[in-house]
Length: 192
Image (cartoon, rainbow, N blue to C red; front, side):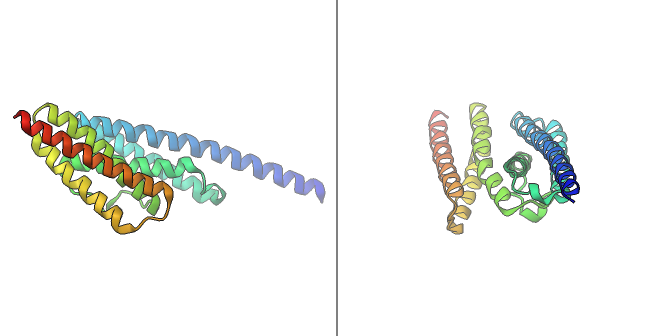
């Protein structure tokens, strides 16, 4: 009986470790493709951004499938980060394309609430970066639209009355991005 238990525990441990390794690899792929999608969108290469975004969502689907096979792994932080990064990329690519911020139900896959909110808040940094690139080129309209989106995200965050420290800290980050973009737009308008 004890040998049977030992065998079972050893096999289960090995199975979970192998699944965890696959989960980590798929999460890393989602993060990599998400960043590539964001960089392509900032370069205004939407074809490349779409391809990278598709790969990111494919990796998220794999991550979610692995968690479905081994629910014990649902607390793996890298899996939550992968979802959040992919949401961030989706928001940035859509914004650069001229589309509105996506509702969670409009995403290609269902993600957790906290992954969505992290992605939403983190997207403001990339919108600031994209706006800076556009301001250098004299595109004040893009920066104005981005400022409106960041302001909306900030106000949404304030309405949530966040209790979690990580989300409150992210909301401060959003506020900082809003302030920076406001200043950058002011300086750019004075140069014109």
